[in-house]
Amino acid sequence: MQEFLRRIGPPIFFCILILCFEIYYHRKKDDRRRANAKQQFWDREAEANTVRRKDLTFLNYMNIPLDSLPMQDTGDDEITDYQDTVRKLSGKRILNLGGFTNTDLKMEYGAANLPELTEYDNNYTTLVNILAKWGARLIELELYDDAVTVLEYGISIKSDVSRNFYLLADEYRRRRQPDKIDTLIEAAEKLESIMQKPILQKLAEIRSYCE
Image (cartoon, rainbow, N blue to C red; front, side, top):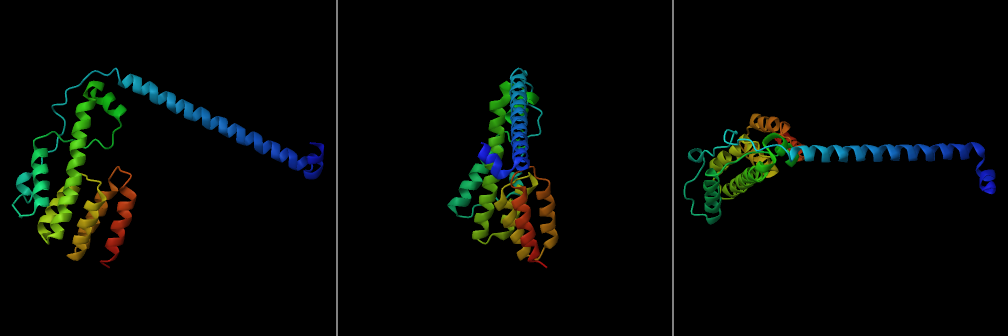
């Protein structure tokens, strides 16, 4: 130890010592912060589990506008499957609960309602994914107007499926409608999703092709 001190000198040694204490202090501080956050989560979770069931009848469920969507027979099995899935979903309750955690839902509507709410949110997830696939297949079949109708409906119900945005933006680009790409960008800016940033980047790229 003495030889080590002689080599580095007392000033450098004390600097190293202070740095070690700083690292130790901040590590302990971070540990306390994580422990507090974990405790707060479990406290809130425990409270959420005691909330009584609330009436879900009057929530703002989605109504799929079947009359406005291209439900005609195209002779394509893939399109028919998508149409059938959307028809089945139209008879179910659909909610976009992507901005809520399970704890949030239990706090707001009661723990006993969580399975039902999860089902309604899963219906929404199924719907927006089917709309993107449906739109993509319509484009492959060169049914462009129908594709735009389907994809625009996806945007109207706040889909965060990136494919929905990209296909629609590319169709607007093909039609020389940059103003509609701008509208898509505005819609993407309102998304509460981890997909927001990559969607915005890609839309900006597609928009640049119109200039």
